[in-house]
Length: 430
Image 1 (cartoon, rainbow, N blue to C red):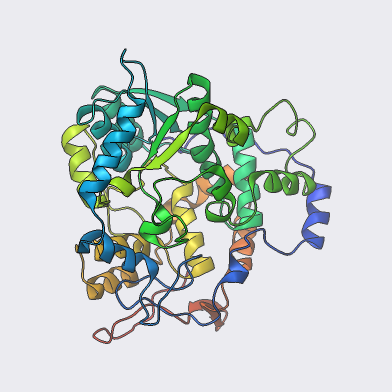
Image 2: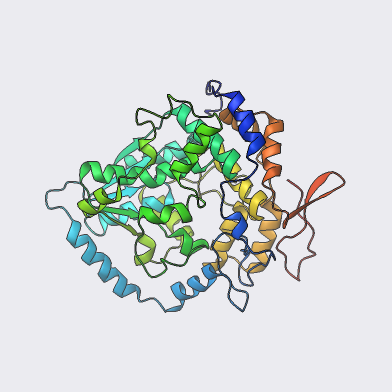
């Protein structure tokens, strides 16, 4: 479904593109040069120190695992935090039934839980706002409708398809991640809607940096601001830098750069956010975040359904199932650049939540992390308007030399997670 979309050819200045490519061999992903030279893996999960901003302690345990010990080990007073949550919601709850909280939501399992609990348990009046995937999956769109018909108001943003494809192309070339075009809107659109409707409260799901590995600066905070986005979500180079470089390389033209075509991707100015008194909070600060439990809750209360089959590159069926094509290549690029893919990301979470042992996590990572999404290669090339040769050229440009080396003309992993109880057989090359 949806794979026969008539994507037109992208028009851009090929002369500028060729000249830019000759002169600019570097990447805009500033995370890469900050990663440790020696690759090590966490002794508790399957995370490595190649996940940007992740810290390891002297015992070889990653920051996300140390946080999970606090989360489940009694160090966090969850009753106290719920009282803080109730106080916050009492401050913002409308008396006339008008919307009083914006919930960024794909209508997937995580945001479904947040919106449903805000409405049914705490008496709030949420407005869900959805930044549409590049190409909806059938199950993703079905889940959107399921939740809507479970009793939720919602808005969906569909960005200009040509601009969105160009942003994805620039992201692929200059950051090794076409998916970042989605992240821009995912972060900015809820702030735009909150400003427009004068709703001074936004509730996201989890603080991914703390839960999965990354910066710990907000570990004891319930919130962040757009000032944090450049480092934590945009790889050290903000949105304006990306479109400027996209213009220099000829992908964007003069017409693209005017008439507010990028407003969807930018948060309101900070002074306007402060003037509204807009607060953004993470649900995971107030409640223990357990993705598998979120799935059970959403299935019971909002009609959420998992994907009919296992997702390429991992062992699960219910996480991040909204985007048909680019999502799989987002995780593949993480494997190429950092040595960890989607199975690693999900196994780490399941190990920390007690659903898997580390040995089981290693086996799942070795089996699925390297899986190539061959089914979606042609639509991916069509979406970005590139050849398969160009695809592999960019892929190879971003291969971490700490993780990959060539043997007999083929790229092979030279470092990968393992257990002493396993034979350490090397995963297949990608």
